[in-house]
Length: 161
Image (cartoon, rainbow, N blue to C red):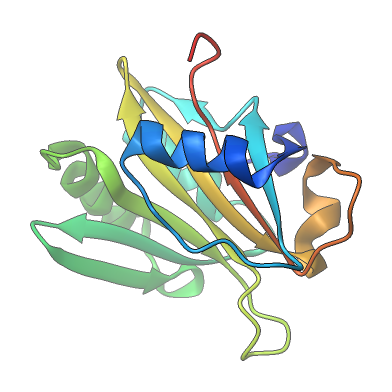
């Protein structure tokens, strides 16, 4: 997975609130953080390929899959190939296809949340549509921002929205 392909373009809080509305989300917006529109998000049509690609990222730490309301959370180093295939089946079977699959990145230091990417299924594609990253991961992404940040919160919405 090449997260440098993901472009985070800083937007106003008002624009970000509209993006949240599109997805039925509502989160509190903070000073010191920035809010972005995701361009060129991670996209895949095959769950097995996606999961192996996510786990290939050097900062990947925890793969999370919702199994009928119960989250299965597995550290990258603890997963066998068979388990990845099983988690892919569970993700593919999710009936809601929103906030059902996440990859969390390593923490630096251990208490500092560095970020994660959440996925949705949209028009037959699995899309990394919701992304939160701490400034320690800013070099892993392409960021078009005027302001420095502690956290960058990004949402993807279709270009025609």
